[in-house]
Image (cartoon, rainbow, N blue to C red):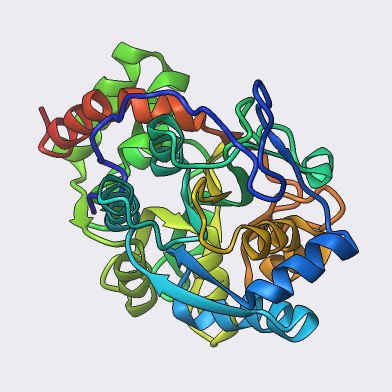
Length: 341
């Protein structure tokens, strides 16, 4: 999965206001759900959202907004790297189409550095978890993707679950472990916590001793865990396991703490054709009502007043800018470790 491997993009955002065009030196636009904003957004009538969110969940998020404000949300869904390239190509062709972009942190940082996102000073930001809004305010995190470990409850007994990563080196796990092929960020975080030399040694011993079934795509890895083909998966998203459990699948998750998380961000395009509708949708998605919908789906919301499905689990949030800067090195090391090198 190459969605987090886009080339590092240079440039610094020179933010401008869309709701009220900026005066010289103005750095940000202020945003809040006011009657004036709602009126202006309704006159625009619609907005275009580029998103990675699975289609089955989009309806739950978009329909309440459309009913509440009478604004149509047109959606184009793709992988993160495809969205990143499409937004850049539109900008270079001077044909901007997108109003709101939603993707994981590294591509959002890339768009910010390219100067394609609007810096928004939203009152909602104060209600979000620490680390949810970068200093530049070009995007804000609506949710967090949290890596957890998942197991097939018919293949793995609960009392044999590993409590530490070192427990995975036990011979009982030989031929029973799976991992996603692009999760270099997770591996780098684990290695950093262990110490560089000890961490890399751990992964080499794991691959050479017990082996890792490497699969591409988190949905696939989750499904293989559900089927029992992969008894224990090291890197799946917590929400996907929750969804499978709701359907009665023989699967559950646990976390070797700290659970590693990557922010999923949302930003307003700097040259959005429907700037007011875009700002209104941005505010809506950061608000408690939409955040409760995210939590109900199984996602980890960022609003401090909305209870997380991961309550009680220690979570380590990775920095989006650092991930972007280090992705080539991190990815190359991960590929080598998966081969036991």
